[in-house]
Length: 188
Image 1 (tube, rainbow, N blue to C red):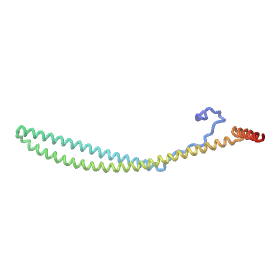
Image 2: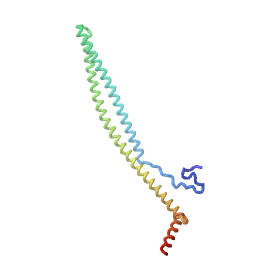
Image 3: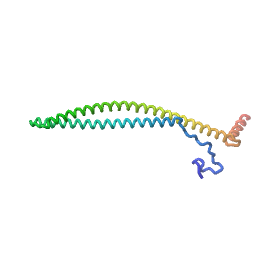
Image 4: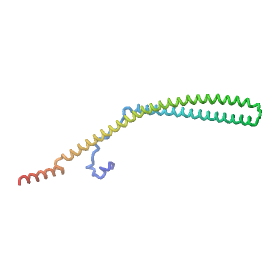
């Protein structure tokens, strides 16, 4: 015996027939919405990739800066001890090279920073387009649910009207009794 909780306890002859299968909500722009979601995800992934490159470059520049400061301390220590070291010329060349690499790293960081800003704008645009379609879908789904509920209520009202319109039903019988009682009062 399968059925809902409402019809489970009714005898077989009094079970309510299923009126109509409920329609399912379909959004006509669903493929476009999925496409917009895919585009947004790709743009976010690109933003994460650029941000990762920026972080790697920043770590590289910080390492170069640490090497620069370490080399400067070694040179200062050699001057402090009045040690004339033939490797001092190599240390200055190394400092020049570090200075050049830090400058190049700063240029790459500035470039990556501008790419990050541009990519953020692209992600925001993609997100706006996706949100527009999502809100449109939510609105259409809400309208659909309201229409289905309205249709269900209409069907229930029709069932109730047909049930109580049958001759000999309780409501019709009580109305006749009430009318006959009123006519007797007027006759007296």
